[in-house]
Length: 231
Image (spheres, rainbow, N blue to C red):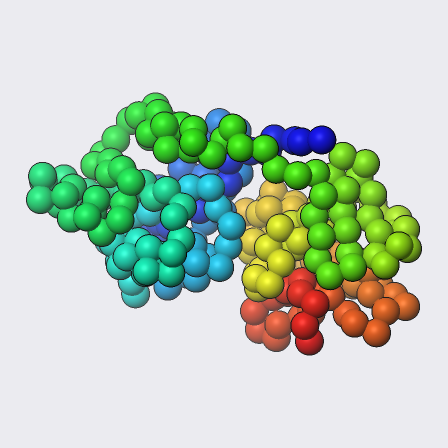
């Protein structure tokens, strides 16, 4: 059986207010959105994560938007990219497209036009169904039954723990930061400065890794967490 999911967008934008506006508007329009605040983080997320669409500003700290696109294409990543830029001459737009961008929208723009461009770019992927089961090593999550097994052992999880596990499994092998977890699992756009994440990760780790000589959930000191079969 097949299910459909929301289009997952990576927004790379260094302007804090613009990013807040775009993230809020896109989420209210039904998209799942991750935000990177500079070019370096954007490149890491774009090349390590699994996104349906990347929306990037052109002028960014550390690495500019066009360089991000070129590096993505060099790595064989075909994710559609929409460039947002205040540079709006014909030559600027041509450079953006030649760098590997799929569309180019000049600032300032109407949000309705941004949505239309995103819909057009994501249409090719939005109709592609995905399987209902996620698997990493001997760990399996059935998205329809909302059940988890590891090596044939049934694992009981709360709804939040299931969401956290799904988030980690969809990014298996990728380091996920506290910010990514807060936004993707709890829909919080600030750090409450509590042990919220640590407590849930600890409970999930105990449930998943208990009785196994091969832990799957690893702490990456100073960065976050990663779910992978290797130590």
